[in-house]
Amino acid sequence: MRKLFDSIRKVGFRRGPDRVLGGIAGGLAEATGMNVWLMRLLVLISFLLPVLGVGAYVVAWALTPWQDGSIPLEQAFGGRLER
Image 1 (cartoon, helix red, strand yellow):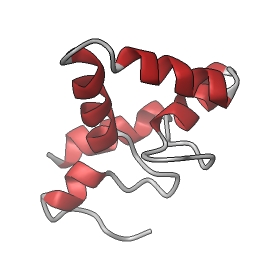
Image 2 (cartoon, rainbow, N blue to C red):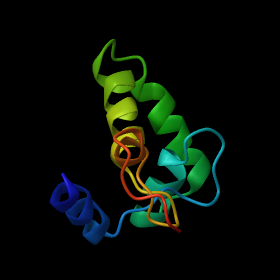
Image 3 (tube, rainbow, N blue to C red):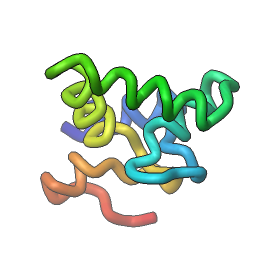
């Protein structure tokens, strides 16, 4: 499992520091160079897709590292907690 989480960290995508809920839209906006509010609107529109929008957000939330590199799913399994 550690290799999986380390490879996720190596991608370089992080949740944005400019966050409202989970920081996914902020991270996507930072990575793509888009306006954060436009990205939030696109994420909200994706929620209109019954399972795909919310499901993809939950998966992204569980696997996307915070700015400090910690990953929620890894912490749930008792993994890395140092900052």
